Every structure is written in C-alpha cells, then in structure tokens.
Amino acid sequence: MSVTREQVAKVASLARIRMSEDELDRIAPEFNKIIEWVEQLGEVDTTDVQPMTAVIPQALRLRDDVIDADPLTAGGRREDVLANAPLAEHGFYGVPKVIE
Amino acid sequence: MADLTQLGVKAIRDGVAGGEFSAVEVAEAFNQAVATAEVLGAFITPTPEHALRAAGQVDADRAAGKALGKMAGVPIGMKDLFATRGVQTSAASHMLEGFVPEYESTVSQNLWDAGCGMLGKLNLDEFAMGSSNENSYFGEVVNPWRRSDGGNAKLAPGGSSGGSSTAVAARLAPAATGTDTGGSIRQPAAFTGICGIKPTYGRCSRWGIVAFASSLDQAGPMARSVEDCAIMLEAMAGFDPKDSTSLDLPVPEWSKTLSGDLRGKRVGIPREYRVEGMDADILKSWDDGIAWLKDAGAEVVDISLPHTKYGLAAYYIVAPAEASSNLARYDGVRYGLRDLPEGAGLQDMYAATRAAGFGDEVKRRILIGTYVLSAGFYEAYYTQAMKVRTLVQRDFEQAWAQCDVVLAPTTPSAAFALGEKTDDPLAMYLNDVFAVPASLAGLPAMSVPAGLNSAGLPLGLQLIGKAFDEQGVLNAGLAIEQRSGFRAAAERWW
Image (cartoon, rainbow over all chains, first blue to last red; front, side, top):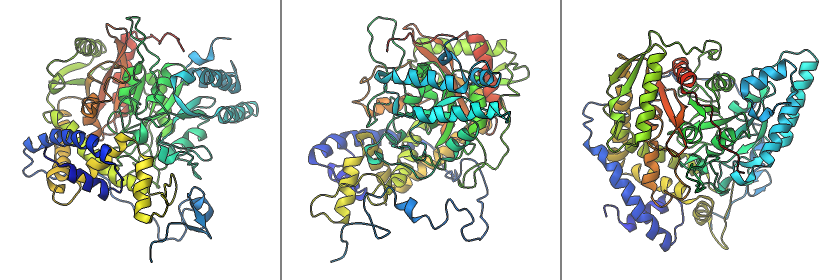
C-alpha cells in the first residue's frame, strides 16, 4: 500500500473528520486504490505546460467601493445570518469554551 | 382534457398563454403525479403549495392582461442543491437536514421571475457527489425505466441529478434543474431517456447553489426535448454580479434560432472515445448519431482529443480538492448539524459533527482532496492535475480548427442496477469518463436520447461545443432528436 493506514488517519484528522478504527480499516484500502489510479497522471509530459487558473478567461471584477452597495450581501442582516445556527446567543454564534 | 402531465415546457407555456388550460390545472395535475410516485424517491420535499401559488399568480396575470414570462405556468422540479428561501435545502445530506435558507439562489429566482412554480426539491447524491443517486441521506431514487427482461431489477437514475432525471422521465415534472460538475446533468439524462444541457461555465450563476467544486459546477436544465431545454436555459442563465465567475454576456434566445439544419457544419468524432471492449449498443447508437448528423447536412470528420484518457483522473484530483476546501464550512457553528459530545471542546465538536453529518462518499472525497492538497503532495497531484486540465482544454481548442461540435456517447453503458457498483468507488467513477472532459474544459455539452438498447433501456448521445456556443450544441441535438424517432416513455409501474 502506497498510503499507510496511519497516513489516512492523519488526513482524516487534518480534515476534522472523526473516524473509528473500523472506518479506517474500510476506507484506507479504497483510498489507496483511488490514489494509485490517479497516479497515472504522472505519465503525462507536462513540461512547459501552465496549470489552469481559470477555465473561461475573465477579468476579475471590482465592485464600487460603497458600503452596503448590495443590501443582500452587506451588513445589517444578523437575524438572517443566525437563523440557521445550531446555537445562537446574544446575537452571536455559540460554541464550546475554547480558552481555559 | 388531455393528460397535462404528458406536456413539456413549451406546450404548457403556450397552452396557458392561449387559454387552453389554466396554470392552476397544470400545477394540480403535476402535484397529483408527484404525490402518487413516492416509491420513485425523486423528491426530498414536495412543495405543492408553491406550485399552486405561482400558477395562481400566472392565471391572475393572464386574466389582467399582463405580459407573461418565458415559462409562465410551467411547474418545475428544483434540485435540492439550490437554496430556496423558506424551503429546506439539504444537498441530500444529513449535515444540512433542516437548513432553511433566508435567501433564494439566483437561478431559482430567475425561474420564478419567468413564471415557473416549484413542485418540490429533488433528490440527488449527497453534495452532488455520485453517479447513481445512491449516496443520498434521504434514500435512493429509482429509475422509472426497467429492463425488458421482465426481471424488474431497480435501476439507477444516474447521478448526481437523479431526482431530476427520474422526475422528468416519469412525467412528475415537465422539466427540472440540474447541476453538472463532472457529468451530473448529462449522465442521468442519458440513463432516463431525456435531454439535459450543461452550458458554458459561467452562463448560470452559482450564487445560492451549494458548492461542490467551484471551478466545475454549472447549472443547467433537464427536460424531454431540446427546445424545452433551450427555453429553460434562457430563463436560468444570465449575468450575476454575486458570482465572480459569472459571464457578463447577453443571454441569446437559443430557442428562437434553434435549427436542425446542419449544412456547412462539421461534426468531430473523437477517436479516443472509442475504447476497447466498448458496449456494442453504445457503439451502434454512436454510429446512428453520425448517420443522423450527416443526414442533417453536416460533414463528419475524425478528430483526436489525445488527453481524454487522463481527464477522469485529473477530475478526481481537482474536484475532491475543491470539495475538501468548500466543505470545510460545515463545522457545526454557523448552520447545519452540530454534534457536541459530552464535555467536548471546539476541535472535537468539528470532528464529531463532520463524522455524523457526512456520508461515506463525501468523506472519501474530502480525504482525497485533503491529501492531494497537503504539503509534499500538492505539486505531484494537484498541480499536475491542473496542468493536465490545461492539456485537455488545449485538445478541444485544437479540435475546433477541424470541427464545430463534437459527437460522442454520453456514458459507457445504459443504466445499471442499484447496488451494482456501490462496493467499488472506482467503477462508479468510470461512468463519467465521457462526460468529464467537457467539464474540465468548461464547454457547453448536452445529452439527447438516441434510442433504446437491446435490453429496452435508453441511451444518450453527447454533443460538446465551443465555449459560448450553446446554439451549436442545441442545433446538433435537435438534428438528432428529429431523426432518432425517440418517443419512448417508461411504462408506468409505480
């Protein structure tokens, strides 16, 4: 196996996905099979080829430097923003204590 | 009155405008069809009241002599990946179960502005990741088609837009929205005998569509005729300043200039799509397609797209990489699921939430994406894949010197049985081998029905066009539609 079970566990930890031992046993071989398969890209000669940056070339637009130019995406929508929060208190998102 | 659920977009729009029937009658007929087809699993959330409300407005506007929209009176299905204000938008994930957006996606708003109503939110593979619709937290979708062997095996409707394909094929909706990242409109359309077009990247705004792989994601219509697709695409597309990759171009009236006359056009047949061991029925349908396009006046030329073989592998680096980044937002803090084990801190909450909220395929892709973007592997995997992506696009650019549109099969096989490929992620990925190159290159591509295979299942032919040339794709699609004689519908068993 080119990617070890421990490496898969490390990647899961980086991706913040808790995985049981059973899950790792199941996912590690699948993961390897996929990685081994995509490694065929190594065959392609990409000397002097630029990696794609935009599929359809476009100039990035700048909006006017105006506060709240678009009311949909501007400020003043706290209620809407918090409406789907698992826990909202005093107009903020609630999370478990992060500092001792 | 004739069965209104047999009518497509144009027939409904024109019938409502001409007073042959009311929009409310149409909505009621489709609501009824949806309510009696639960066994197909096409809808996650039916919204009959939305369809009726929009239809009532259209009827009132007509009575008042107001101008009617491009799709006035047409009720549609909405893939549950588009944010709809006040209606759960789940992306078929446990993670977003109960998420009710406070805003409307640009594409869905465009459709309501055009006079559409919503029959409901359609099932899909979780976060649009899959090719069979078996990855939905809300259950699988069943293809209305069955093999003619009498075995009645349940078949996959394709994915990820499997609810959309089943709903349209089963006459639960005259049309539906889809999204296509690596074939998610075209492959399900092919599996269910309907049409579907992925426009040029940037034609339809991504604003309010749950993100999967942002450089590939593109919305498009799924319907039962090329003309219906053209009409609906006109309604969906358009510049949107809220999407930084939205094309700032006028939307052509594709449906008005639609023509199956291909005289003077050259159709490219990519030799690399003809792979060893290919399904004989697929090969035959491709040959039929070539003959039909010749009959329509086109000149057929052999072309080469030399990096086709590597497109799928590049896709399975690029798409998971972008997905791992996009799906980092599901952290149990701002919206969606939160799993907070007793006494857990913030990091544990993230990991527990993501473990509980995501299904296997989503986790698999997040892990692959995280791996290929990680220090030490980024160059070898991600950068190399983006270089190959450049080469795939270059292949097409060189092909356009010889042809105006490319004809190829949409899929390597007809619909497979549910459960047939669920144990082998790689076998499932290979389903998209013909669809992915156009996605990587951002090109408009369409699937149209070509006929039935020896088992009585529909097959699709794919047309790929130059960037911004949806018209060329639709015209070639129409030429096939006019000659294939495909009128078949799945026999009702549900």
